[in-house]
Amino acid sequence: MIYLDNSATTRTMGVAAEAAKKYMTEEFFNPAAAYSPAVREERAVNGARKTIGSAINAGPDDIIFTSGGTESNNMAILGSLKAMRGRGRIIVGSTEHPSVYEVCRSLARQYDVVEAPVDNTGTIDLNRFESLITSDTRLVSIMQVNNEVGAVNDAEAIRRMLRRRAPEALLHVDGVQGFLKVPFDAKNCDLYSISGHKIHAPKGTGVLYLRQGTKFAGGQIGGGQEKNLRSGTTNTPGIMGMEAAVKNYLNNIDEYCCAMRACKMRLAKNLTELPDVLLNGPAPELGAPHILNASFMGVRGEVLLHALEEREIYVSTGSACSAHKKGKNRILNAMGVIGERQEGAIRFSFCPFNTIEEMDVAAEEISTIIAMLRRFKRR
Image 1: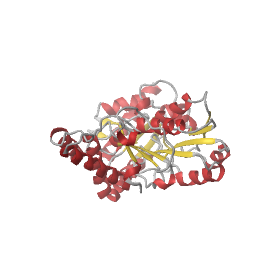
Image 2: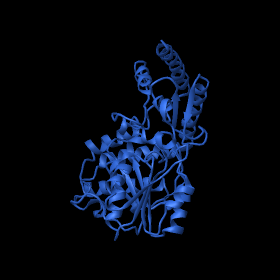
Image 3: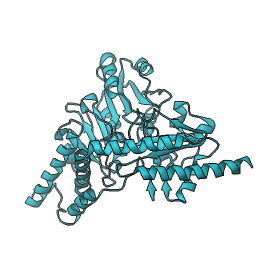
Image 4: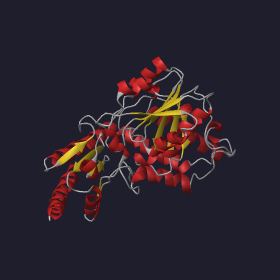
């Protein structure tokens, strides 16, 4: 099996699975309880806050644990707006993940919601973005790394623009695809979303970074966990599994990122040597290290995906959240990738455990398949 859909989800790494198992079978106590084993568990959870916060130069008190990227994104947008007075403008990237884009769209009756356009690489067009900032802008939500083409946005530049033109506005960065793969400093935003299962942690785990002093109304209401900002019994097994994955990543971060970049560059080289293959997004050496998007002209992406599946090579035609939706790809449309080029687009996404040999095998299989499909189409 060659798994090249790591932006959809990753295999939970062994140390993360073992940590989760320990807190399911041995240290299974509820950290909200008063007796000593539960207090010990609470200390472990707070240690995880410190570990995860350190990865983005944030303190443990800035970390709210959630069930994943979707909840973190929803809570960042709704929780911050609920704490604000009055209405105003929301700026959302035109290529955002549905857990950001659809939430902002749902607020269009209450707020002036506008989309920040991207250039042909999928990166926010900063000049056009700046022109959208009004004095009554309340919130900007922009992804750190585009989940379909790997474009990296400049959060620091966006924050500077906001401070000049709308100093009270908040900046939310969706870091689900960028966390640990592209350097990030929490000082460049007010809210930052993380999802555990994108970094080899268990599913159902996530984090929302909330800058100290930010007015925030929180998410789920209930027992008052997470400083009364996100109620619900603490998912200790998931949190400790996520901490183990983050520690592993931090201990090997240069090696891991170089390994992903090497696989991306090798596959990009292999694919562009094939006839009528076009790369989408930034140049492979400029985008995030783990995402490559390519169009195979004259071949439908969905057909190629299933042909590769028969050979136990797993890829995608875009975001997993949109895999069962019919119609045009909103992300590629925004980039100007349309028509036959859009129909033939495939996303390859890598993890540190992919190999160069896998890239060669995948390219060979793709070469055989597209030659066959093109011959069939000509008939």
